[in-house]
Image (cartoon, rainbow over all chains, first blue to last red; front, side):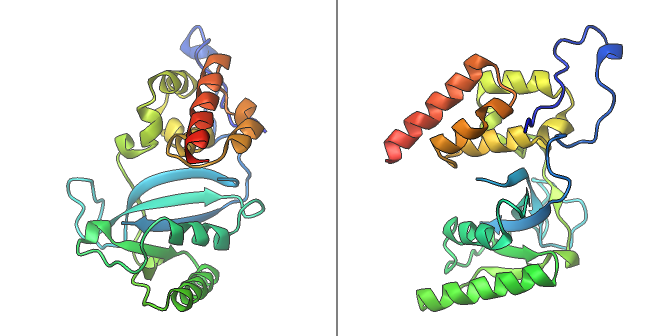
Length: 40
Length: 189
């Protein structure tokens, strides 16, 4: 599993950047649940 | 911790629309965690939640209330059962509230509140700036969430070693993070 998004650091221009990706890491599981807490 | 995919700091529990840190209204500072239920259960997260605060203390300030928000009836049942078990074990009332998230909303806090520890680790942050030129992508990054947790005192060295290669760091940054967690582990051993 690799959490890293395609690095843009080596892109030579905006055209070299990867296309728009979902705003999550690609390797994150598609199915997840969410918990919400207030911890004081 | 294992199975945590993303985290975000924010505000919840109140009625005010679009709260901000300086205009919080009736909301409480909150944390949202996306998790993989195959690797960590909601019940296991609840155990960590109870350990992370004093559930017998009731804050006088809405901003700093302790609340367990449930998203659905299943989470509500687990939350109430967990609270009742804790109360029986303590022999004292648990004053942490259990509230439906549906009646309010979770508002994500300003970017500078997100991944707070990581933001202040200059070398690591430099690498994340290169990996995530767009701030929103950084905030939603699993790697950022996990490294922020290690920097905040969570996780063990063996956990880090199992996933270090997947976090996208250079060899030097990975070694630095490993040394940081190793030192912390030695201090607390």
